[in-house]
Image 1: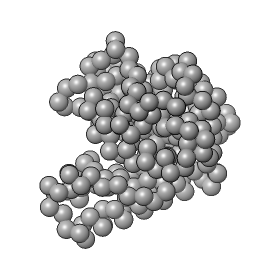
Image 2: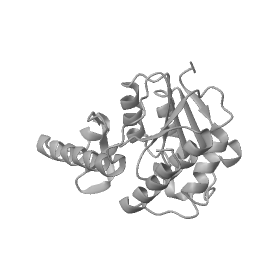
Image 3: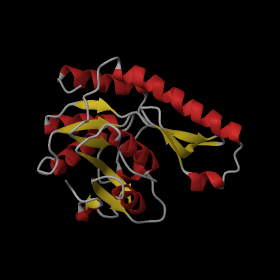
Image 4: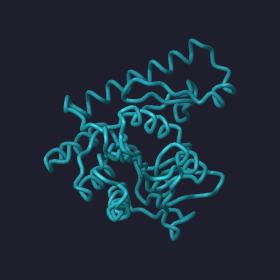
Length: 234
């Protein structure tokens, strides 16, 4: 087993912007880092939609590993949906950032409404993206959680905790880019964090690591998953 807190980065990419062409390029470069790591035995790629799906396909192809959806949805602040104060996972578990929540002055009803909205979105995405396919089991394997970046890390934390409940041999988080604080935060929970482009500045945006960036619509995600299914990955 790996020791908790292992972090792997590409030091040449530290604090750089625009280092990946797009998510596909980032996925291929992430895969080239993961492929030689002998510690990652029997991986199952757990792609977090939407942004983690193109990367997950590239990693699954390179590692010849099965892929599954790791649907996690942030619990949104009512007046700013870009900000989350927690997350709901594919198994229905709810994780709330109590420190952030304490400063939001939300009523119990507002919190419940936001959680219900996130839970409904998770169920909708499971139906849409999993399409009834059985998910490869995580028991005894390396759960490889893939997303397009780590900003605060709180959504990934929920994914790590949900994956742990399925008794994997280890949980590895792999992302192209992330803030140093988020990477250290997740490294306390995962067995390994692979983050090629770690950035230390106060302000951080995942999109800044990419030359071409757009929010992935569900239709595009479904098309990518159809291609992955045709390749026998999903």
